Length: 121
Image (cartoon, rainbow, N blue to C red; front, side, top):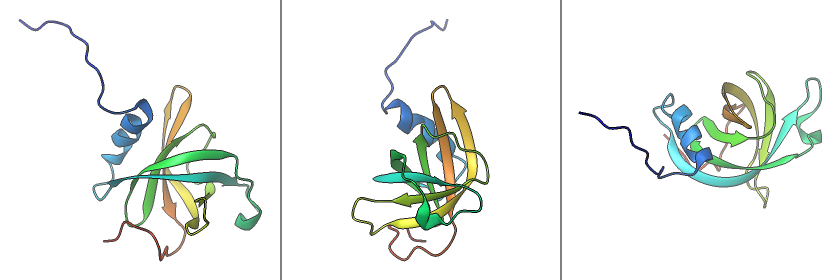
């Protein structure tokens, strides 16, 4: 007879929620890349975006990045993602969102070719 039990998760809470979304992206690979996140307001230039949050890209595909953030985002929002040395500075658009208590789990698709992206087909 089955007994109720508890267990300890192997991943941090953010990573496990992002991993759940990554199941819908078969090409997704673990990445763990720290970046700054900016939401680009409609009608404004991406270069003028205000970077408001530090996040970690948990998974990537050749065309998408997946991460958790505190910034309230919705499907279709435009984003800018940039690493500390600006070698990765890209525009992306939100293509999937899962709302978790206190977090938003996001998949964002690059708006153009990213020549120095580490996940290649």
